[in-house]
Length: 540
Image (tube, rainbow, N blue to C red):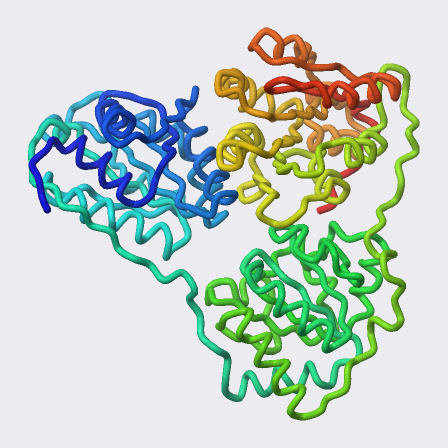
């Protein structure tokens, strides 16, 4: 049944009709009435950010943890351009988002904040939808949600400001989406792939982010083949309880796992695009048969050319491979019989030694792994500190890990940590950030986390430098002072913004900080003071 109402009310109602209960945003001229209606008329929750780009990042982590489409809103002009880095990050991370972006009135082409939004959005890799007329609001919003789910990327919906107070009939429109795409592999390529697997003496199964839902089928296939299992970073934690789990495959592998991968003769890759960090720039795939299975055709052949490529569903294909192995009575490889369970995921221990006034980073991570809440969500910002975190701080499953790794940016972590926390309010969120990243994008949202009362543990790896650049100067025996900074005390900053924190300059202070985690109330910051000469290099 249709009814007449203002366009701003129709947009809010249409968003609510798609099951949205939480909207992230920053209000301005072109979206403030819509936000008000979403809260007052539709009973939704609005989470106000301090910076427009933060809204996109919060919505992205919310989508990852909740499994829903994330929704954010900003106004026109510089509000959209402030979202550029976030849009690239989330588009490359394939986050299903709808971003409601206001636009300047069409009858005022000289408006100070006018910009060609379609061109701006297109350059980021996100999609663009236009709110066409006041009468098509429901259809246009439905189209944006449909595309976000099917295309797995942010869709920016342009909302002209001059529409907002126009009246039009509204009738609900929701496009149902079947979210299990992909068929069953068949034909000569499948036969060739099965032949390669059957003849392999040391096969290995690798699962990426596109194969998380197929975990049980992949485990059955691995056990049938007696093959070890490994994950990409995006699917970190998928095989935690498997006795022959190698953990993360590639440059983040343990020395023992890396050597084992090098010995394998066939790698069956499900739901991974096989980028350079996974393959160690092709070194780990050399002289091996590579079989790549993915529902996304674009993912295949992007990193390297496989010996057999199947555009098909991961779980169904794993089941079919196992069926034909059984039919042909192919014996198991026996590869895992050579392995000692539990020996493949141990990284080199930290020494605990550091210069006076600093703490050893690896030792601190090992203690944090033991002391942090076990039901945590883990979020990482960008910086040279992050690879050791990925290797040494565990998660219960891939949905509990959020890494801002898709654009090589820093300063995005706290925003995503907030989105993760709002998606799972009963679980603590642990964020690892560097000093530079926190100064760039963390400080401006820390108070937002305080205002929302989030259970957030922020760990700052503070080496008082831009570490990746610091290393390059040191390696070339040049003065690294241009990369070094005298930041303010992050603990003092956290307290001034309404939170709490502890500075760590020794192992004794580290133990005090770990004890303080137990009594935290609201956002809590641990500042690890690190010697810039003693921070491990990035494993990339």
